[in-house]
Length: 193
Image (cartoon, rainbow, N blue to C red; front, top):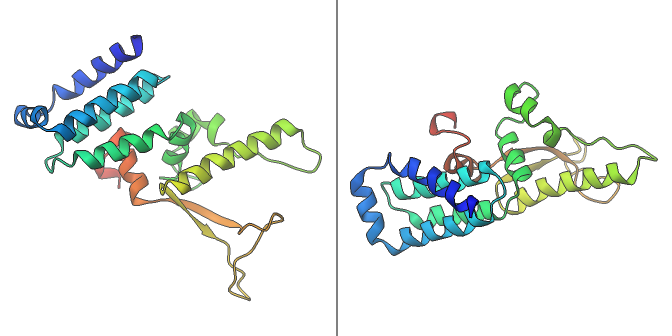
């Protein structure tokens, strides 16, 4: 029950800033009510204050949207429901994946975004950590939040492959949908894009 109480406080804080006409319109719109209900469902399952904050931001942004595109906000909310907290950190990482990108963010989340290095004879725990880290990135890509750019052999013009027969990834980058997610959950503002 504490989760919902915390969520209600966060949402109330954000709703107080929304124009009263938009709030009245939202009260009459079934899609807006559905968005609010979905927020409560996800908040009841959330394990962190950050997650409840993300949910409250999506719902409040959906209500305050002048275009009243509640369905899009609900879609983003559902996407968030498919991500764990580490995947949200990885998504934010891909906003500025360069070596000198956002040092404060990198230091704060170093335990999540530090690449797991492997070598011959490495302990199984390290291999499992690497695989989990890679699965986070693959999941973000399957959801369309990031994309991979593959290494191309300069001589043949064909993709290069690793030992498992998978195309080698040169780098990953955030998609417009990924940026929208970060905006709606409040990790970036419109001026950052």
